[in-house]
Amino acid sequence: MTHLTLSNISKQFAETAAVQDFNLDVAKGEFVSFLGPSGCGKTTTLRMIAGFEIPTTGKVVLDDVEITDKAPNQRNVGMVFQAYALFPNMSVAQNIGFGMQIHRESKATIKQRVEEMLALIHLEKKGNSFPYQLSGGQQQRVALARALANRPQVLLLDEPLSALDAKIRVSLRAEIRAIQRKLGITAIYVTHDQEEALSISDRIVVMYEGKIEQVGTPFEIYNFPQTAFVANFVGTLNTAVAEVVDPAKRLLRIDGVELESAEVMDGRQKGDKVTIAIRPERFNFIAQEKKANVLDCTIDNITFLGAVVRIQVLVGNNRFYMDTFNNPFLELPTIGAKNQITCSREAVLVLKN
Amino acid sequence: MKRGGRVWSWFWMVLGILYFFLPLVATFIFSLRAKKGVLSFLAYQQLFNDSGFIKGFSYSVLWGILTNIVGILIFVPTAYWVRLRAQQFRTAVEFITLLPFVIPAIVFVFGLVRTFSHPPFLIVDSPALLIAGYTVLSMPYMYRSIDTGLRSIDVRTLTEAAQSLGAGWGTILFRIILPNIRVAILSGAFLSFAIVMGEYILAQYLAKPAFAPFLAYLIQQKAYEPAAATVISFALTWACMGIINLFGRGQEGQIAGGH
Image (cartoon, rainbow over all chains, first blue to last red; front, side):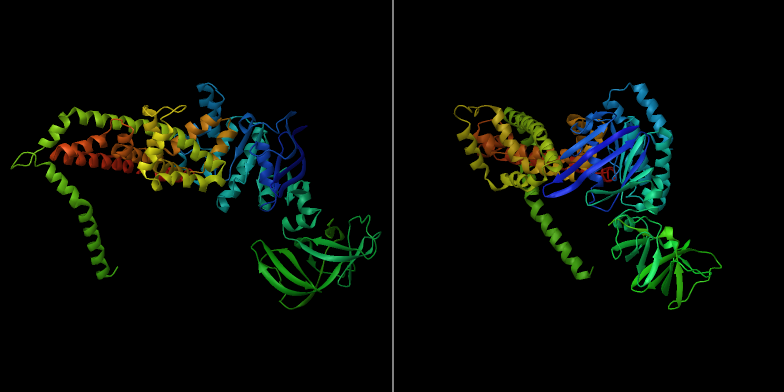
């Protein structure tokens, strides 16, 4: 059931189109991430849901009620900011209870809910502390509790982990997801960190230059990117320009070598140039005789990345990455050696643009 | 630091201290010589027994308090709004707030008298005009203190956080913004208060009782009491500065935590 709908949303700042023709339906309890580089319009879209920006065109509908022009304080929307935005003059408990005070809840209700929220974020003993006495991670958990205490219809999170160090980011994102699942609240999460988006979301909206590039589950976004931007932005990807040899047989040619793809090539003609994409982990060295999708290559560089070893190879004029899992008995090729790599036909993606 | 550099630092510091404090010390000693041959507080006693002094001083305190109330009510929302929504006007507003430094008070007071001494603005006799004038004169101190305070907090994000929790403008201003710039407001208020206490031209030409016109009158009439009044005036200004420092101490951590 659709809980939040954004229809034909666009936002114009003077000459700049920050968001263009944005359409999205979010189901109740869903965790959706807006992913994209700086300036792609993800935060602007989030701010339009919060009411801090009014769309130039389009509608925002929450639980069948249009809220497009409603003031931020008239929407029941909780927001967590990158800069925490805790009120420095208030204790943790006062911060969490602030929204309920505004909504004139009784003192007993406020006290009870503040305690519930403190337990939820595992900061039971910090109720009387002030924000400046907490670490960054603790402050952000308080900000989350404050946003949730009002029982908002939607929780909006604007790059909430960006200001934290790597380890805390990982643990806190798991905590945010666990809390969101526990409360069953609809959440919209803005991030430029693809790993964060892939690990936390039910669905990801990849944005670029104010437009939606692709909407899908993390699995779909990673494994089946539809555009060159998504393919390059999410994860490491090898891209190359190939020539269509036989659309019916899904046969392509790259640097004189024929490659088979599993993708349907409707509308493609023989001789068309297309961009293909292959994930580094889908390449293997040839272990036995194989006829299809074999690429002659020269080992160009080898980089040790911990769990993964990244091997850079030259295939004609194209430079490809190949990832292989690290193990203590791995036999690595020598740099400059000639070799052959291969991939399955399903690994060869033909991008839309 | 090299030895020679340190000697010169001390030299300039001692010179500065002498330059600032010698006249004050001399004034203080002079104020103690009202009784011939001995040092006494006679001039201070006489001053406190003078109804003119009490009246002038009390009125100046009253004008100072009223000026601060009006100043806070005008400048806090203005500085807040400029930071939040009207950044493009910031330079213009800052320029306006500095005008009292470049427009002589005498020019300003004649402007006030000319403008407000005939209908429809016949308020030249009202203390409101004096308060308005003082508010303008204290504007550079009050506005800049508040603006500095606002700069130390993330005004926009705090405002949006409060809005998303359901707060309206009044709540945001009084429960979020004001408490977090309390120190800055107090600094501005004490500076304004010190300015009003020592201000002569406005009170004199608008014919309102105040401390500075009384002091000027006293200088023409007596010898030792004006010196005593000057020392009291300085002590009051320093007390204001001391209070500003007192309030400012220990606030940094709290403000930094706001980010």
